[in-house]
Length: 409
Image (cartoon, rainbow, N blue to C red):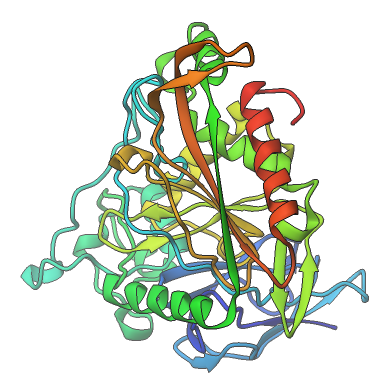
């Protein structure tokens, strides 16, 4: 019998509220299926099961506030040896806010975590009207209720939630008949407290070392220009996607820089899940992961970034996307920052930063001085797991990857 437990969805999360069950005892569930919604200081999150099977019991009623690790439900699966409980990897604190930039590829490096697709965009609703003429605060709704509202054309602003703490649930949506998508509510001040707690812990516990390498990315920009010449505007590739691709592809060859440090031990990860900070429209930040980023092409990375940004800002992230980044990749280039000296997000062991692309004098291999497009790539790493020699080799490998986008680093 597998157990679904309250997952840890934040660096300082100790408890959460079970808002809504999307299944009932006797239901058949498949691995990865969303079965519940929980509320944390990060907002409302979908929770998936990690084992296929049959729901035997729901042990926590909606509205209950329970500690991390509490058994929420029991699932009897066909594979009794597999774990049904959600992983309790702590969510890395996001990087500082950075607004999206859609400047040309040669103008500046676009923050990989802040990319939005160009061309025709999905309609983005404005603030939801206050229910019953009250406060202008957006209505609180579970992710499942928001999706159903969009599918059925229900306007959440006119609904009164009957769920815990007034949260709008699927049953509330089913009773209504208007149209307007809605977004979940989040408290940015709570997010800032979580960020501060995680960064304080990082400073206190992790012996950082930092390295920097300047890389000529002129070949990368030429490649992007060629790729974009054959693509529609909405599918245009941006430098930030190539940055994520290069760092992720390289990380899979460096176990000491991809994984976690927990309970006094290094836990290398076989997969590379690139954590990306996303600024939310209502304030605050989240840092979901692009799963298996090392196995994706730059174009697939670009699509994954756009998808994550859209779902994060409409409150449709899955719990698994915020629990398991194996390293963080960040850029503040669109804010005019030349280089990023990051702080590791515990329990991760590394953070890769990209500054803005600058036109600088560059001495080539033959001693000639030319003007090239240069970006500063930085690494913050945990000295308990790796050292400067390995970190320097890692950075040079990223530089080689940027020189040949789409190929092997």
